[in-house]
Length: 419
Image (cartoon, rainbow, N blue to C red; front, side, top):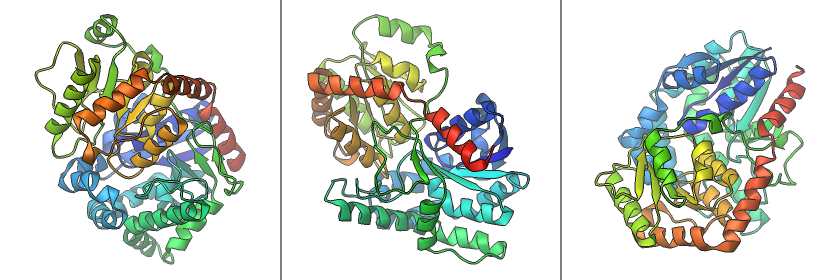
């Protein structure tokens, strides 16, 4: 059975796609990843056939409009619509056309749930089944506030569900003109926001997160599954640079700090805050600059700087981790069984910061816009010294490491596809 998996965005968006793709391929599926050209090497690393899509979302996110989204618009759902459309206008429709071309001989189509309107359209054109996957919950529920909604507090089931519906409408408005232009080209009727909601409530949905972290909401239908996290295989077999090994062996376990692509227009500010916070807490540190670019100079001897490294290898060797709260990075921190200090910038990151705090696995998240050296130092101190927090994080890590998220996802996909 030939399956096309469509993904776009940052590496954090593509990683669930390639990890599921590898799991399906190992179980006899013929898998093609349809993603922007800059992910060709990642696809090859996972042994997947690759169909390139025009447009580099990662490059766009690193540009002026992308940085504006990360710094300001992403925290304001209404403003995010204008900014997101500006980013997507040059590439959205052509990406959809390329994904359709990749799927002409496919027996099934899999895509991230936020792209459900595009997935529904391609599946409709080709008359093939559709499966949705999500690293962060998109389906509204009374159990918690919608990811991306500005107020991340449990104010009751009615508010929680309403906030989830609001965020669905926001996501729909990001894509609406491009989805309906795509449908018009193929002589299909336009979709509406209610169609997006119906897609999420009627299409098989695989939640790539742990039931230990997000228990399956009781108001979700039978089509929605919480299967467990999808981690990178073989991370423990990675061979680190000799300099990193020496640094780790020279003293106590350090604190990891990295904000991925989120450093924004002022990476020097974040770098200074991080170095000052580590100095205030007398902690050794490992700083990951990421492709978003914290720029680190004049490094003290108790700090090691790296570009990137497999989190699955590095995090278990840390005493705590501080990061932006991306879904994948949060998952790795929780799996490592150590406290996480979340500094959310945008979109779903405040959701994960609040979730970690509510689990007792980290202190109160600190918004990136209000981050100071003192605030970060206090949070790191709590993460390193709070015995209850460390025990809770350890317990959660053990539960997550006992799960088989990819195995569960493949089993459910086989059932839906009759394979």
